[in-house]
Amino acid sequence: MKLKSRLASVFGAISILFSNVVVAESDVVISVDEGVSMAQPIAVVPFAGGSGSADVAQIVADDLRNSGKFTPIERSKLPAQPSSAAEVVSQQWTDIGVDMVVVGQVSPAGGGYNVAYQLVDALSNPAAVLAQGSFNVPAAQIRQGAHTVSDQIFEKITQIRGAFRTKIAYVVQRGVSSYELRVSDYDGFNAFTVVKSKEPLMSPEWSPDGSRLAYVTFENKKAQVVVHDLRSGSRRVVGALKGHNGAPAFSPDGSRIAFASNQDGQLDIYVVSAGGGSPSKLTANAGNNTEPSWSPDGSTIYFTSDRSGSPQVYRMSASGGGVSAVGGGRTYNAKLSSDGKNLIMIAGDKVVKRDMASGGTEVLSSTFLDESPSISPNGIMVIYSSTKGTSKVLQLVSADGRFKANLPGAGGQYKFPAWSPYLTKQ
Image 1: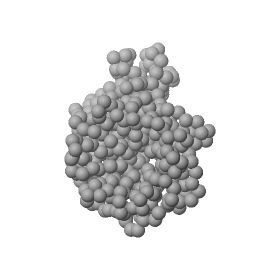
Image 2: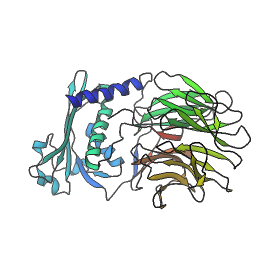
Image 3: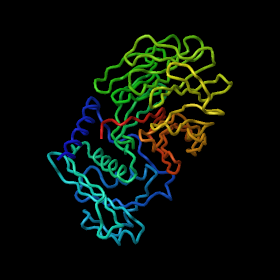
Image 4: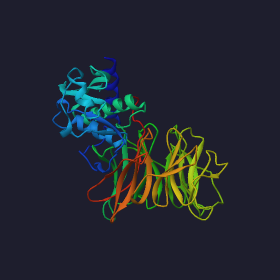
């Protein structure tokens, strides 16, 4: 009962957060480019019963695959289709090199569905249950129910918190005068439009609690930073200095926003209260400075500056002092992972990962003209925008660089992806 009650509050919170939007089925959907040959094999058996609108087991398998840490066995190669741990015959699975099996059931419950699962250790004989859960979900949130299963399985096996119930925000441009700021599940499903405009929209960033988006709008014929409340739909201009204002980033506690403005002729970094007010200037007289992002503890701001002659990533204290170079070479768009161990940024035109302890750098992407990387809250996946032919498309890569996928969108240019934080306590 405790598990059911806790998860009921999770789904209720998600429903309240996005209660003022109309949801579409999908917008961009993950298409695998490069799988992981050395990832851990796992079997996700089709769940008994079914929702009629979503294949829960397939969603779970896709989530685990997308993390880059697992290789789900193809359904055609499953030796059996048990629906409970009691039906799992260990040798059938170990014979094909599978140590762990996911089984479950989906059944109608109170106008929605009950989702029950078990993670089974096939190395034990008889097979042993490593984790299990049972919870009710509204019919419209069956995919969230599947992502919940994925989160719990992922955390049980890896000891890393799952992030499959998170969202992404991004901008879609259609033609020269149609822009939409959209939000979807991390895998592209359940997409909806936050705001439409005939003028450009740019650079969305999530507040730490996932209730607000800061972004750049040209709707008043100048680039301004606004904060958009996703619950009420209300918007507040927080960055409207003379000239161009852009690249907003919430502080980790959600109280402040760093942004860039060229009101004095060159781009500089400013910080303003998330509720608006008078901005404070952090950089001055040192080239153009833009693309601020905060360290997880809020003590440091990473940013891009051309003070040395070409764009490079720097860091400074959150009050503006102690500037030092970090990136090396032509680097920009830097984001620090939530554990502070890795800096994800663009070097040249590729997504790279810099180990903050060793200084070593690893190229993660193999696409063209990459930009705007954003990291999942558990640091496992990175979403970014790249160029494919004449189009801008969204790409997904695991933080170890082994799994790569694209999120093709129809009829538009897909830009500025931003990964949400955890939307609720789990």
